[in-house]
Image (cartoon, rainbow, N blue to C red):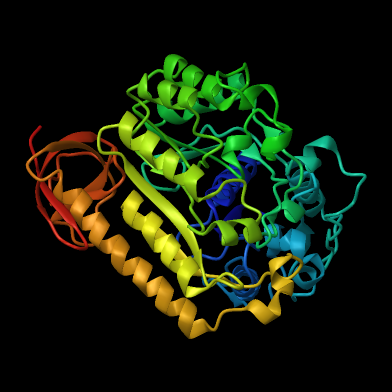
Length: 479
């Protein structure tokens, strides 16, 4: 077993964990399979946040098991063997946790490892078995709810998987997972059942990992977690959070972490936060963000709904006015902050009046990007049982289209405010159109500029914004 491939579906946390898995495999001497080549070890890191994500995960696993295996050359020619007598397939992540039996039943799957197992330890164990030939084909590990797993396993493998010291395969920005787990139990969400144990990465480990990522070229970091605002807490429930919920911050809090990263990570150019709620973005945290130039004026603030009635049905921990006050605080504290959001439309029982209330909040906040998606019932959640209140798909689709149209107008208006100004862009890899380069500015929107072969990928360049259209922002490099 010499090569590996990892396919990942889902959120930023999943993407980060896939990088950790890759780091572990490299430490064991495996190398990534070349593009287009079949790997000896195939790992599929799955998502189960919606039924559709679960279906896509299953499809991804089936494709992985059907890939041919490159056998040893015979008479100078490589032989493709579709029976997969050599390759191994492992299924991990949230779908492996929510539907372990279904994952294990797919022909060609050798092991299923859930979130509440020691992922790093189990991977190492399987590699040892397969390297020495002790394991037989078809063996599965499908007991993700085993209460006898190690402490590492109860934390989703966070401790047993390595910190990242190699370049991530994402864009120029790198994800840094600092938190795992949620116990808030929004009525539409399955995640608290799949990642129930809350965990926060110690500040010194965050600093060490951040410095390593910056040293290898990731000068922009995105702090991410399942519930980022629960960093430093044993619960995501506001009513049970004590000292850190008050004004000010205590050692181990999100504010303390940001301070430490900005003060101690040499070469860090940008720091983003993946997602925050009204209870997270306190006046003191805003003051910390304002005091460090590394913290960019971009905030992802999920709204989900602008109706108090729907927010209560969702079991969200804020109301409409809480969200509006947070938007106003951010706009007052930062120069033209870029604000993005998530919205669920067609939640069970949502009326036209309640959707109109969401539109009103959207108009007030003027999000530069709105990820609006129709409600999809997830089995084993409370909202999935409210079948009598389900909204017809055409109605939900119409509402999604309305939000997308409004968001496009707000995005265009926002970017027009920077025409004639200079923004800093971190240059990404060239696209197929080699005559054009691009990268994201501090406020997250992508900026294109005429191809400049001498500018290296990852470089920070100053670009004067010249023109803005509905789907692109174009500028000229000034230095």
